[in-house]
Image 1: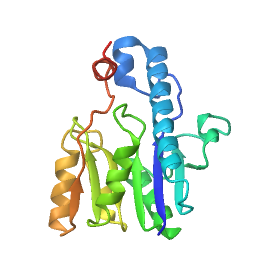
Image 2: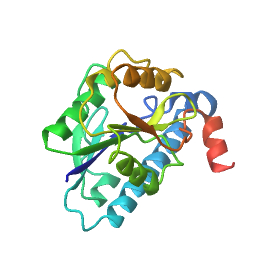
Image 3: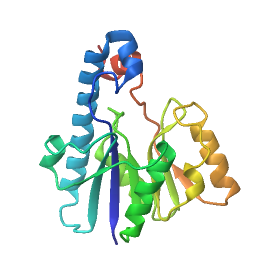
Amino acid sequence: MIYSIIVFVKNPVAGQVKTRVAATVGHQRAVEVYVELLKHTQKVIGGFLEQHTTEAQLKVKVYYGDYVNPNDLWDELPVQKHLQAGADLGARMKNAFADAFGARADKVLIIGSDCLALNPTHLQAAFEALAQHEVAIGPALDGGYYLLGMTRLHDFVFENKPWSEPTLLTQTQADLKANKVNYQLLETLSDIDTWEDYARATAI
């Protein structure tokens, strides 16, 4: 059994990350918040890998938004680095899933780098859900999702979707039901999209 985790990240460049956070506290502080999110995400992946050190068939691939950074915090972990490819977020996600399944993965998860509430148990729960369901979804409070898992590629999940809109999850669920794909929802968590989200998550 081959398990794959895809991590989508952005390059921490001022003006390019967490623009809604920047609207309140400025671009430099927004970059600092995003770097904290990257460190948290890396720690979650590291923790999950430590718990599954005997599983040689667990592969982690980090996909960068603009360019592959050859020297960053991901070098501390046994991960592969790639560049996202596609005209929009849906196409980029679909291509990443296609690559994983093309490499014979049996279960594939994708996460972003926006959730301070994420921990290794959520990844474990997703893989366990995929033992009985074709799709696993980690809902976000903003109406999107922080995690998506599949046992095979369902192209329609990535097509004609309202990315970054509050109806993303409900539309995704409607399409899964219409296509008779069984799925399981995981624990609902909060992404960090605004300064208020960050302040609430860190109790500042």
